[in-house]
Image (cartoon, rainbow, N blue to C red; front, side):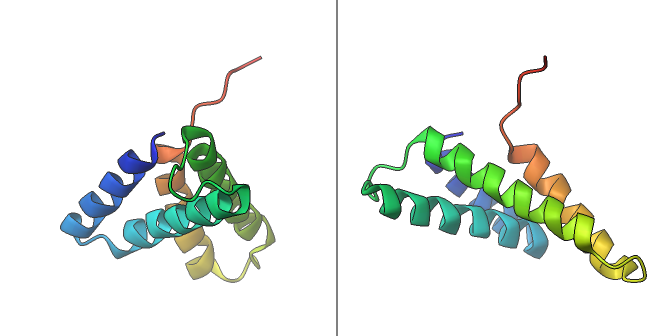
Length: 96
C-alpha cells in the first residue's frame, strides 16, 4: 500500500468519527515514518516500508490478543476490533 493511501484512510476514519480506526491507522503511519527515518529516507516512504509497518502493527496486535488475560473480555474485544481494521489494510499474503 502506498503511504499516501494510508494517509487517505486516516482522513476517511476522521470523517467517519471512528476513533478506534483513526488510532490504529495513526499508529501505522507513525511506525512507517519511524522506519523510514531509520532507513534514511524520511521524505520518500516506499510501499515496502508502509507494508512492513502494517505487518508490524498486525504482529503487535496479535501478541496482545494472545497474551490477553481470559477474564478481560473488554480488552480482548478491543484488540479484536483493532485486528479487524489492520486486516483490512494488511497486504495479502500468498498461499502455499
